[in-house]
Length: 98
Image 1 (cartoon, rainbow, N blue to C red):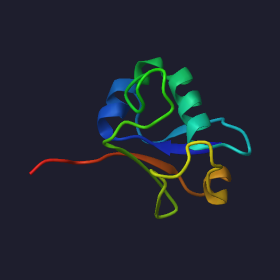
Image 2: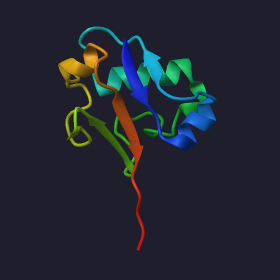
Image 3: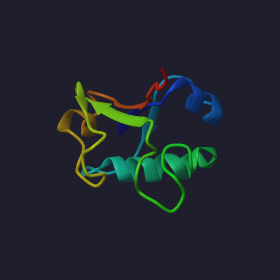
């Protein structure tokens, strides 16, 4: 079971509180977690990655085990601690502006 922590605005959109637990397999990647998340919560389609693409939106970041996974390949397996449910996968909306 993969623990996913969404930013507040996406938790509101998906009507969930706290962490979301996703079944994504023992070799889960960010892409497979997002696939499972969008299947379970279709209202999130297009919010984390544009429809028809596997790339994240520019102001979305992924963190796990105190590491920024945002620029790693989306199909790379998640860290062992995330796969074991010890650590969550954080999906963070970056802040921009001046």
